[in-house]
Length: 310
Picture 1 (cartoon, rainbow, N blue to C red):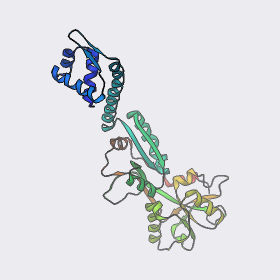
Picture 2 (picture 1 turned 120 degrees about the vertical axis):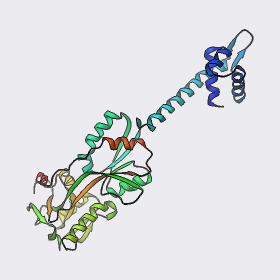
Picture 3 (picture 1 turned 45 degrees about the vertical axis):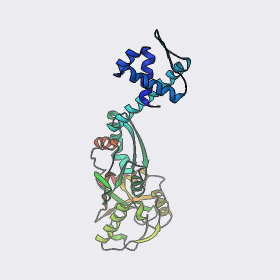
Picture 4 (picture 1 turned 90 degrees about the vertical axis):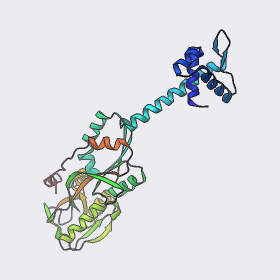
């Protein structure tokens, strides 16, 4: 059974006249008759009865017409959906993001996406940088909003936020808890809580780069991949963890009832840039649509650490 045979049959059913049906389809009558014969042969039933006076549908033909119309309509809808997706007017988009992206990038970008591309379905997944890039590579994400950018030819990227500061995270009983800021060099001799590098390579490297610049060696005494776990560890042990300033603010570090405090790191101030990353061979036009909806924004300045009471 061929799709064109369905279209021809529906036209015959509408006209009940082979001459007019053939004219509408830009076919000869013999060609149209041959198509009907092939369709009936493939089905094993007679769909059209005709003599020198009339053309009519058989009972099987009337039932088949109903089903054939549904098939043709569905194919037409599929074609329209495919065209809209290819043009970036509809489809789906899976976006990974971290906390700074959720605060500074996504709110306005998603409003623009909804206004400009209401038929694109966007799904959002909060993940750290490493898991986002892995998901981007295996195709389960279309765009990653992450710290730093990969250096491989597999990906392309665009910077969205510049110089997101990192802060030290300590417990309320730590001797730094009441200080407004601490030179990075004072981490020498401190037991630190750190995550595995594959969780967030850019943040990990920034921390060690600042240590090298300060000519100190970090003593990593404990590992915790989850920011919440880091806060819990430092609340009960005299250790120092690390977090982005937006993360510290969102977790209410230093607020009444919180057992952890965010402290500025100075000389140098470790910072990160936030990037949108996508596959170099990307074929989903919704990616370009989203990137067009993203505008560069500045993160909260370092002085906003005052929003996290010490």
